Length: 462
Image (cartoon, rainbow, N blue to C red; front, top):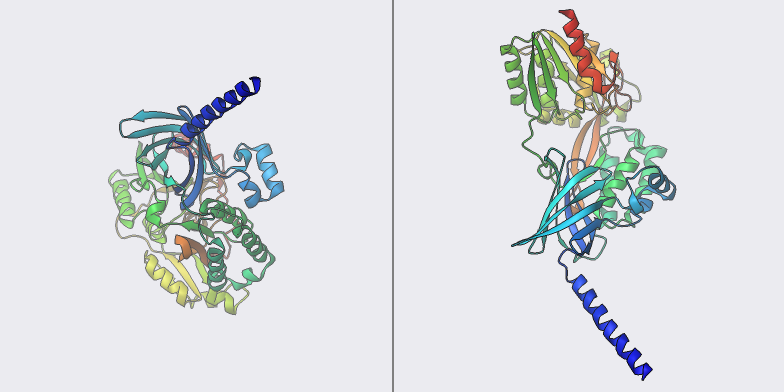
């Protein structure tokens, strides 16, 4: 009798246990999702997001232990020990997730944490489609996620094939072939080959590429996925902002040189209309951009024509191991027209291209010029800062710049990836290389204090 009762209890328990598991498994949010993650720093990557659900709460994360695959055992140990970036070795974690219902689906809220930043996770699940905005405190959309339940077999792509094309393009088009003969390139190549057999999704591959590319002796080398339109999540954001501080003082904030020449010209027409005598140009956090907007800016503040530096191409380094002499520089093509198409054509045809600043005929600023920089000021921004500093046209205030100044181009790869690759080196008019070095400010102050420093300097002049 006892055995029969015990068997019955086991049967009842098993039934309810199965029912609970069935109910748990039926939740539309639970399980593995194939997600498109669009972020301006890494492009449009595919990743696997595992979501756990309990009642009206959820937790989401990428693969456990991915840090060991990408960073190695020792570095991953240090990362977990001294930072909160890699909980259990996961690159992305969504915490404090809350689920609320609506007529047509579910509303999702949580906190998104990753090495790319922490954001508010605000999403919906409607008819099996996950849609999420990652926002800042101000509500600005920084990145997006969208996805469906995972149906593919992992890995998501042939990552070995992607990297083989990376290696081929780099060794063919990198501005100096001697770099690919060095130990650092060979180490990078070997490490990425090994990792390509272990990663499961785009995110893991891109993170690995970024991490090991930092050890190479050149910048502007990156692996992204998707078009530039996909990467620019907030495409409506203006790149320029002008503020009249009164007393002839103006502040022009240039977030990047990714804007248009028209936008730059309009800013200087406004500066001219306001009779600005002291112009502070805030380039803190400006990561560069197009030579078009950069040269347009320089031409509006130049007081005379001057040499803005030289691009040296693969054609030069194939024939020379030294920098060009003055006589050799005089034979290079001069470039003053802010047109990126023309510049790239010359880079593929010429040994060297000399950048020339030519004062603009309209809305030229002739007053006092101050440039604010920090360790995020890079690329085109660094070249123009150094040139204006060298010509004693501007007082440069802040922190040393990033040291990432090369000409880069984009090459299409399999699986929708794009390789960003430097195709020309850059040297200043006085023969200094900015890449891996940076620009030293004239006045060194904390980045946070740079604007106040210049404003106080100008106020005290009154």
